[in-house]
Length: 349
Ligand SMILES: [Fe+2]
Image 1 (cartoon, rainbow, N blue to C red):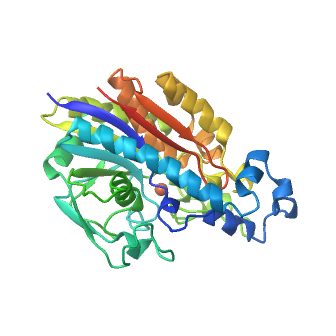
Image 2: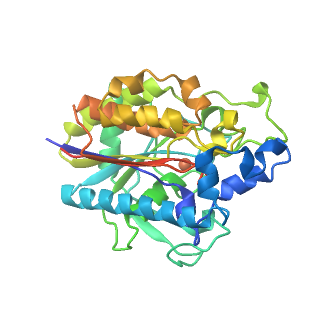
């Protein structure tokens, strides 16, 4: 019989630049459509003003990154102690392989291995490790486990897509960064990964190219795409993954990879800062293993709070509910100016 470890991490691209900084916030501040009263710190919430401070957020950015890295190191220790045969990662595809030609709700990537070029996609900034732009990493996949997972899900009436090779880009940033960050100290990372991209960006995956809207040129409703899968469907799919893999011969780490509410997706805050109240509600439910509270969230609540990427965590919550698992460690790492709050969590057997 298989054994399952649950992990929740982030793949926030803003961790990698050296030095880090509030890049998407600066983009919003330069949007001509932003009302003038929000263009300076006087119009911002107190926490945001404190983070911005007198150095445009430079010190907060480093402290935020270092706190997240400490959490990731802890997640890696837990992963190593568990000795997985593979990890299955739920992550979003932000107009990377989900493009105009096909946008599946859920996909299982059944690769033997894939060569990735992380800095070829995330251009414009020197990275923390000073790795050259053409550096390549070979990431192991696990085709047999991926096929077993897709077969099991289809057998439970979850109509997942699967793929044997990339369509447009070697691998989405959610998956590349998950490995690069779990290997922050560059000791090497040998665990095979089955990536499971989810169409978290839904109504904005093509319309906004999986990124942020313009305040100057807002999109009309008719320009938006069909929605993502619902939080409840993600939750139920996660539960099914846990059942299928717990009955497999493998030790599997089930990993949700994403930050929580995103400023650049929170229209009610003019894309300036995330919906921290909504994040704290869900975090309290995670801490107390009140997973049913997660399943009750509607997609419109998730979209209103800029929590589109949190659909990855809805999968993890469904899986942990299925296994009757409580968190063994968790940490809420808030930031208004670094686009999103981050959470690191482990659910050990
Ligand atoms: Fe993402």
